[in-house]
Image 1 (tube, helix red, strand yellow):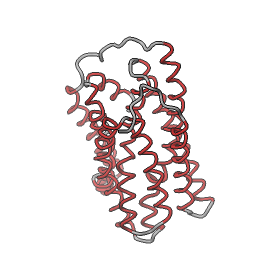
Image 2 (image 1 turned 90 degrees about the vertical axis):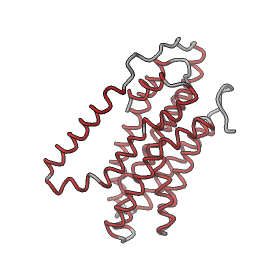
Image 3 (image 1 turned 180 degrees about the vertical axis):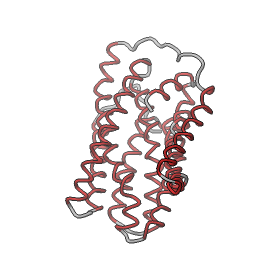
Image 4 (image 1 turned 180 degrees about the horizontal axis):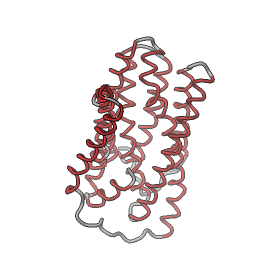
Length: 279
């Protein structure tokens, strides 16, 4: 997650990096889709064989991709001047906070979507699994869509769009049981769950465009913040869910609130004069 993008993207021409980052994180969507299709079939042979099957699959994919990795180190770049680094530091800290809030926003969907449909709405596990597969299919396309969007309108604009759409879609989950509206919200969230990753990576590249070392460090910090708050969100939302008697709407609204705060934080953050704007 941390190293692959920053190892490959410096070899890609700048106009193609949005699309390339989308292709890199396409694997997240494939993993989600696989969890709704392949993995439910494996436990029928036993838990031990399930883990062995996943290990063989992972090893096979590693071998398949081994010789497609860059044969040389990324091109070296001159370190960014100190005044550029200072201008970018506050924006980067805000971005880390936003990315952590985005993790808090995504946890309830990942954990509760199927259970919400199956038990919360009383439609059964089979219908719940159908929504999860729909979520996974949308996730496959998400990185390409979002990476291309960032390449066209700028990654800050794409970041705002992504935060706003996630907040709206999760609020819809809390407010309605309509199967068609739920399907639409599921697709939006499926696209943005992995799609937000190339957007944030592109945003980092916008903030520190001339410093490859700082780009890698910033991406590592952003990923750490996301992972930490994803874990904390899992514990926190589990507590809320049990404490308030399986109140799905409360959990969804809390996650939508986190995404809304992240959006507001970006709106309040002044843009640098050199940054791309929505056009």
